[in-house]
Image 1 (cartoon, rainbow, N blue to C red):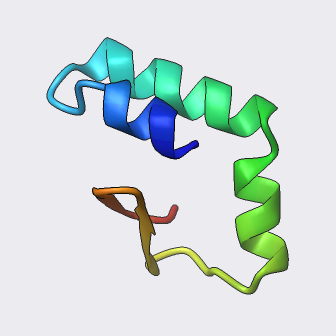
Image 2: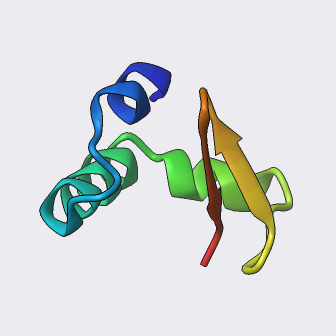
Length: 53
């Protein structure tokens, strides 16, 4: 996931959508939910930081 995040251009909407789809297929969002991450929490993957929704 860190490699995917590092290679993603987060200023590009299409690249963001691709990141989301790949991360979803990898089970990243399911794992975050199991770890207690809630909507509105800040998540850091590698050097990328985002608000979990």
